[in-house]
Length: 543
Image (cartoon, rainbow, N blue to C red; front, side, top):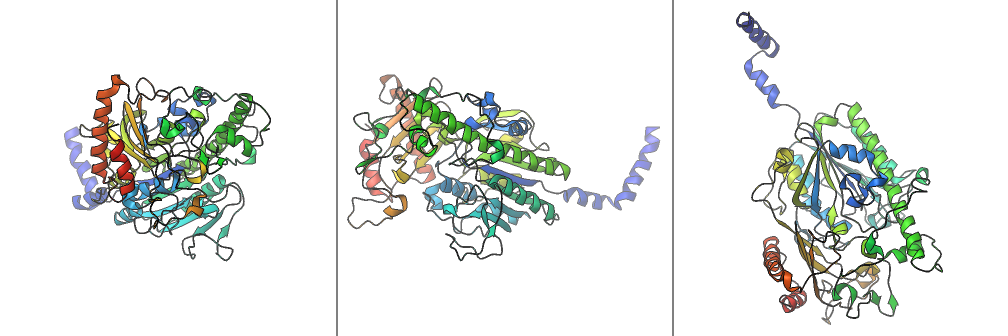
């Protein structure tokens, strides 16, 4: 019976397609997946439930956690420079900051907006909505509607935008034509994205960068979250009160004092205590009670902003499901870097310490990625662009320094030749009164080696040097002591014990220095253009 019916099935197939050739054409013309890259500002792994931090029990991200468990979670995703503008430049260019030229918050990406350019070549419509923060017009995108004002950060409430087709200006002035909106930025950005998805030309697949301002400080949450976590106790990191043997003279000074002295003043902006001044905590309350009160308020405000992001992701995912595009869309979620939430009594980012350097990175795509996978493969933000390009059907351009991890997404397996270490460099020495010394280093799965070289990238000892001190409100001529730090992450994941110089780690220390030097040469960051820094590095390499 089956043999007799087979010719009828074949004839029916021919009748539907006309010819076998036309059927083949239809298969070949299957629509490419859409790609949505979602990035929140300063959303660290401690603030994402699936990463299992001390805050996970508070259930801060139920929507994002469900999403994550339907795809792949990256445990070891790292930023190459933990500050907003340089991180975004690395993501969009696929290059390290010394290569793309954006080493600090004043950097302009200019003609290196490579990611949208490459995706347009592959037939994608490209758009960016929300926070841009790269100063130059996002001209490589087919459409943009980006936050302006507040130094490119945009405002939390009633945010202002510039849209494709308007005259782009940075910085904006009172004369700049802009689009004013009402509401909280997280809600408004989601509204704009859903509206764009509803009204776009669906003849092409799309690549959309959907960027939230939240939860960047000062953590201005939507009023509806004022009671969220109000009566909950925020678990504290032990290092908030006792930093044990974390740090070095490079971060503490020769007398084990904070090196935050700038001129005749002392800056504590990078600590929980200073944040209390901005949150109206009574300055007369003595420690440790003052620190406890500040920390509780700090984390609650942060997680209220995170809650706004999570709820708006629910809105976005619901729209994609209703439109039938959810499962044909590669969805990526990440932060632009990590963030210190009181660990080591630090706030903000910039440091190479784990909470600042580590990024959440989650990918969902049911047609190509098995649900419920986690990987400890080391990736960094220069890898994002190559991976997205290859998932869209292209090849990584030679000018990109990052590597595609598409095969890890597809198989869950780490290739035998995959990187075993990632490179980091923070350039903005003592900037913004945060008082973070400039440093670079290497992170493997088991160890982290950091060198604090303590110099601004301009040689401020050169009488002919020119630089914009006013921009950062700092005296860059104040050098800080050079020093090494080494952490055994397997036995000391919270980086509480700097073992540099410990004889038991001499072999590991030497191996990591060899690897660090090789990696600096591989990525082309050898300080040949900064001889005053190279001099400090060379003088301290074997110390």
